[in-house]
Image: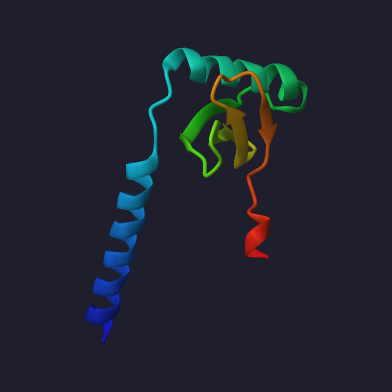
Length: 104
């Protein structure tokens, strides 16, 4: 029984990892640095001095012209991921994630 559960869990985990890597996009170092600088300039006064911010999970969204990602924030106080949506040209960004209201 334990072997079947372990095998099933391993299969599900493998599929999740494979699914995430298929859709993930590489973000350029310049764009990543620009977004990290934006986040620090906008919210930096509220962050501990040892805070490290990284852009992760950058991928196309279900809406044409938009991409999604996460700011991964780590410090001695803890860590947190914050979702964001950004236009393809990088000019507009909003914190949060897209919600399909048709699924309600």
